[in-house]
Image (cartoon, rainbow, N blue to C red; front, side, top):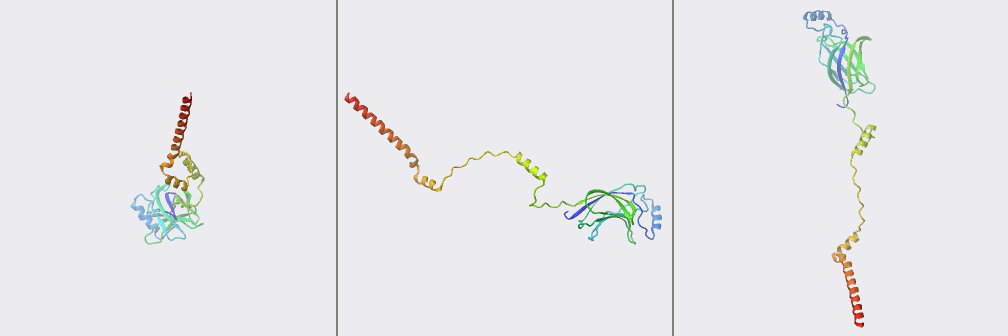
Length: 222
């Protein structure tokens, strides 16, 4: 989608416990008794991606970090956010959800450029809170200008296409024919084209007749 950034949340590692909320101790004891395999301090987490100038927030599905599985938790969830303004960053936060209290921050990082794969340190109050691996790119490349000059790769491709095209045979130039000559030829008709042949035939006959007359004269005199 144009005007958006695509964020692929790949994995999390070494997450620290979220900021303290009243009743966290009781909840930790309660969850430890459930024994569902999840870390009591890292339950109901989400990854939140937001832009400071936009009210739109994108979140992953809630997840639990398993016990003894905090070294590398694979998520592979894709989020889309509006493209930030120039010089503005995208905030990536790990948040612990609470039903009756405000959500607690685990850690966060800021991304300023969609440069693909990145591994970022999460911090909370300047303290290390874990790491996140993600891939952030533009949703769609910008549309090229129709009047812009082609890139060097496009120029090379155009030259290859021109070389692969078969050469056309040269065309013979047509003799210029005026409208007046065509009109005169049409009015003269077929007789005009045969007239020179008829005159040539008559001239040959007259020459032959003269020769015979002179030969007869010579024979009679002798």
